[in-house]
Length: 472
Image (cartoon, rainbow, N blue to C red; front, side, top):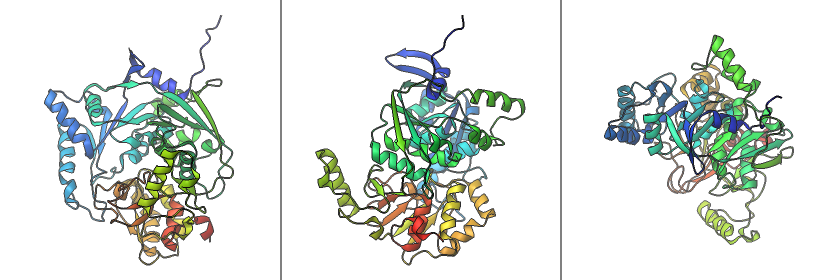
């Protein structure tokens, strides 16, 4: 008689195939296929290795780049942002000593770590990938099992190529229907966080599926998975399909020839089996979804872009009500205010969420032939040097600069106030990044999260704007 096997989910297939041993109590020792480093925090991890007299176990599976604590100014040098000089130097020293490939600040493959991992084919379906950054969940969009880790875990992976991990449960979110015209993956994930809550994914790995997901490009899926952590989940995934395979073909570190054919056969076995059930199943209908905008200090503080600031008094839960009141005070907003009546000081298009070529094209389509509103600082930062060069080859940089945008070099930039791109106290910014926490873009800065198209339209009008209302 044939042996009956239990249907398995995408997550379980990858986790089980990478489990070195079960440690008991729900913990497993997991083998790591790829380890990504950036300049922030890796210096401490390498020092931990040095103190223990340990070497990097698999330097050939470890890759590094400069992205967080660097300037993105045109013509930047190592010294452009003084606070980053030592970080840049240390990463070069540590990667050289341990024979780790570094995508250097001045190299053609440099970029934000979560942008270059899929762009170079380092993130592949069915593999495990970790990095000392919470938004490592982004690359689950290509069927990778990826998550962010702390500094001590970075040191552990460097020394052993493994990690001790508590196995999460699985949540599967089916996004039913098709996204309306003008509504993006960024709007979808913000709406999901708003509906389910910023802690809904805690203890879960999330698989996004359904018609709305399968119709998304790989870059849009990367945006979707990028914000899984903002729902409380360290892991976001989309099963690989023909869109994935086409996007990975020919990438610098992707397999080729016979290796590609073997890899492809394996990748096609990864999607969740029919009859496999997650610990929590959710269906979210997207047909009537509108562009989204955050109003507060959590990605869960989100409404339709043509909506109004909510009233805390309408919320029964006292803790949630207090959180809303605190957010409104910080953001200097009143309940009932129409978001499209809110003036802004800055617009930032970039970050590991929305800095890929499709994001830049979408923003440029809105901006072309128009001018940034008087008094607004508008900044666009490609996610990688490769993306910047491609955008320049297409003339997108000229569209942005003609409108009054700053066109900068690749890096994390204004997503996080660790470099020279930041808000001044009290400034209000519409940003395509992933976090609107207090001080995230600079002490006292106020952040509204939106899609590239909405951010671009906002820069032109000077007020929060639904880009659909500006269609040419």
